[in-house]
Image (cartoon, rainbow, N blue to C red; front, side):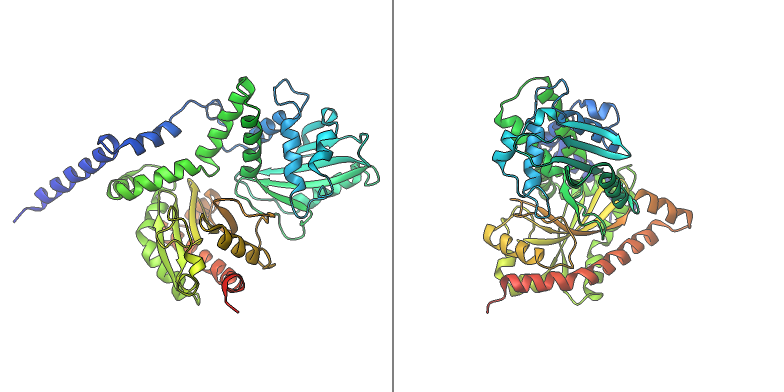
Length: 431
């Protein structure tokens, strides 16, 4: 019979072998491709910009301003305004792309931190405009909206820019597709990814290869490494995770990053978390796929009852559900619980999205049409660095902190699931 010491040595050897297979074996090309995507020099990372909203706002204002010495001219500003015209509650809905094309955007003024507003765009009245247009933009990368912040900015715009002479547009631009707080419905919620995708299209169509375009591409790469979704990277991670799950779990167990212990605990408790979600709601919730930053849960009631709900494309969830509850770790101590529509049958996704949009009690950023792959719906923050520090100051251990997070998640699910259940039945129940 082998001794405990021999068993420990064998376990250590097997662990090292699994990690070697992940990094250097013949099938390690996917891991190497991930390294290629993330291991690059980036000037924005070098100056510590990644999560600093002030620097993001400065860069965006620079490339939107047609009077700055870059090669974009008015193209990015025109694209930004075109995206605004497609939003349901935008005051620019009466403007067509043709109106924008003939509008003199060269006279636009783009200001930073004017009366504390992150970005302010002024478009003076021109020949085909009845009034000028002023666009106030509040940008959020990690921080949440401060109390009365948006209402104060709105009052400032209304007092400084007469409605007789100016069309007022208010934009709440966030990395996580958050919506503005209750009472601020005049603020148009936009996801940063939506804007960046539009700007990328302009650069690609124009076949721009000059220093301005190269710097913009570095900015986009930085966003997708740290803040926004990166479809190619996520597909590679999913592939590597499926093939080298044990090696990755070993690395997770030993990784020395902030928030890693919380992630590890959630990973260990993921099965019991699903059981708790089920026992404390009226829905049968089971664990689905997990990766390095996401824990997916699905509602079996919907999958078993409606074939359309399991019409996913097979790249996202083992259950093929097109709707998932995702416990997502953004970075460090930032954890959020989301409802997500994922890739799958276009007709089923559209029907479900329309039904969810019509549930007025569900709060999320509404678009006229659903994005092709992923759409974040309502969400609830479970942990931030400040919350973690406060709980630690109260002598709570990591187990207690995770328990507090799951309590918050359960409350959120109890509030939201009945509305999603109604939406699913409206979308797919046969009459």
